[in-house]
Image (cartoon, rainbow, N blue to C red; front, side, top):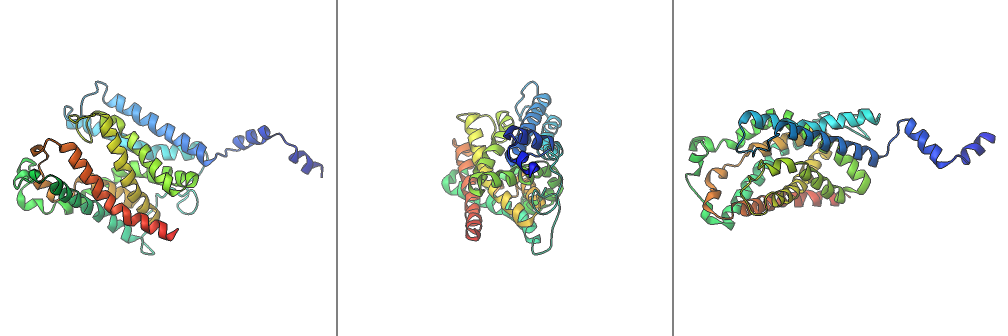
Length: 308
């Protein structure tokens, strides 16, 4: 009875101190530690890699590759956060790192989806772009891209092959955002709000690259703020798809593959859409891509909420 009484009257601050001493953290604390580590290390890397703030077009390929190494910090900080907070590494169940690969129980189909979705919304985006601004159609634009016409039609297959190889690099981002940030956000605030907040965080993380013209160049009205806003919108939509296939497959690897295929540009129609023929190249192109990705996002959200 005396032991029970003493525990009952223990001061709340003592319980908090003993809890922290034991190495326990809340999801909010873990998430804040993760985000702090990720943003500080990545932004510091971009400053070191590009001290003179050269634009993406002006720097050489070697420096571009050097700067691109910043995409590995989200997964590195995922691991660091688990070590710092003594969270451990699970490959299933609660606090799953999603680093494993699972093909059984039909999960293989999400790997297939990861290859095909970027091709679908990329082609759809180019179709919408031509519909909104037909003057952009240029039957010989592929020549300026250095692509032979007979090779133009194998771009989706080339992007898939590139995606398999590039997934190891894209794992640097997806192993952090989908493997750590999104599960924490969903537990803290629910899926709907988490998908929006997570997309904004991911978009803002790209801000240093957007400011040097990596995503949209530098020659557009409202640079770089409009570019950062568009990047946040795009990251919200793509983040929904990437989180969906991560949850369904139980692995971040389909998301890493989809991320890499997306970056490889799998569209055949890109060889016929010449943005230089229009004065509204940035706005029309971005609006078209946002619409095409949103078309894919809608059935995904319906599936999620029907299940709920």
